[in-house]
Length: 104
Image: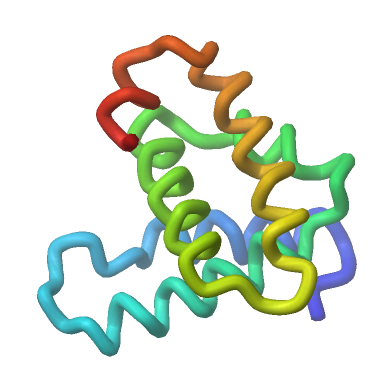
């Protein structure tokens, strides 16, 4: 498990950067989703906002897609944590932005 903020944040950025967004390989996409879910659930509630704020618009778009994918296949306690991520992304997007409408 990722214990300190720096490790979790590094893992988060690595997972975002290495996301296979342009591949049609479903196995790669599922593996990336599993990795991202592990990373997201490793954060403490107090660290989520900092992680979201460290992203640019494209990163936030991708994060929102991962959050919704995580809701499709929940694991133990993942939905509660994903809801916290979702809330911080919505605040970042200010709830009416083109980014949030485009992702949904």
